[in-house]
Image 1: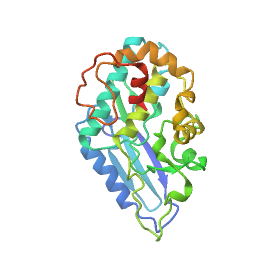
Image 2: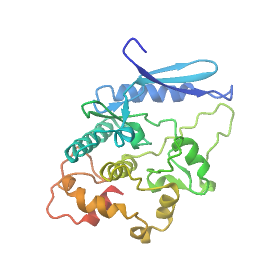
Image 3: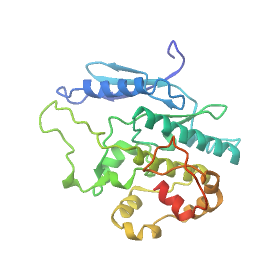
Image 4: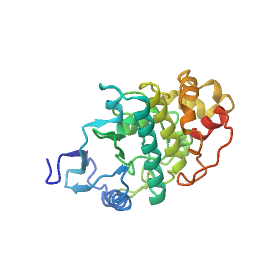
Length: 268
């Protein structure tokens, strides 16, 4: 417990003495300062650096959205819509602060006892692009829970030869999160909403998203069957004004009749 209440600590061991942690620490602190008044965001609050490790600290919440989906009493339909509304507001706050999350998934969404939502564990130290032909990078950075779910935007996958994954000089700083966009976070949010409204079913795996990346013209054939259920039963609740990757989340959109295929195109 901390003086301000229970905290979650994430510990990163320093394997290479020449590795410079300062730029990464500064990024975490900058995100904290930019999101200080964002009431649907919970960035890391403190960074502790020792000679052997780095410790990131943030306030504790008992449940993540992943936990809450499998905990009784189960969420009602109106509660799910309330959560979805807060998730849109969270990304709007991030966009206003010019902060990208980079790893939005149900495990990184905190749920209070009264269903107040905060997104957390901003991934400024995780790569914006990973190999599409080497799943070990995805597992190491984005699937430590081994759920096999993958909510990264398809444009984040590249062939290994196109990526610079290691510094050329000892101690060189690599801004690995450079290239993240708000549109990428919106894709991840669409995946979270599918999981939310389909009782915890995972919409995408690493393999399926890589296929979607490289077989784009056949992409409609690659969507799992749960997408149909999600679209036709629930998407109308958000149809009037929400997500389109190329516009601001803070700007309401006029809506007349919107085809369900157009709506999923806005998610992905």
